Image (cartoon, rainbow, N blue to C red):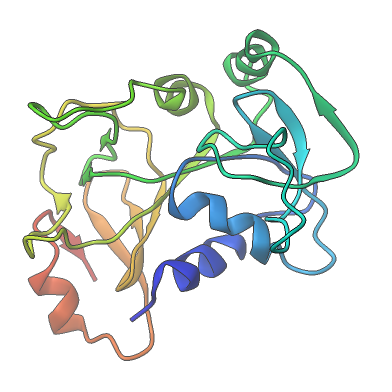
Length: 209
């Protein structure tokens, strides 16, 4: 079973050389620290940064350099800083090769819900709806089981949707899944120490083994 750092490290293996990648809030931001050696990618933050580096070392933080989740970050040589209008212009014109997002729920059809829980305060929609509508490839980084012990991989989402039929791959603490063309969570790999029985128990949508 993986912790959040393990999930981020596993997702980093999916990043191809030359990709332009957007990292969402939460676990996805950790991916910046695990880009494989020799792989050249450009990380984009929707608040207006192209060329985002790893998190700064303690004591080297600069409050003027933050990602979309308000965390301090570093910049790489050749990075560019601009306004949100230009940032979303890049996203909407499909200049981003891969988007990595967190999620509250994912359905077996590839629907994603990650912006609102009815009755609870949220910061707002953010850029997720633009990202899932525009990215060529979307990977979800999430805990498969919520705090109540309930699966977040479902036959259909119960929370308000961010996007429909857009998720391609999911990496959780238990396993890696792909959304099958006909629908369903296709099991790609089990993480160390995880059994197929555990995955079956914690997957409420259709599981394809």
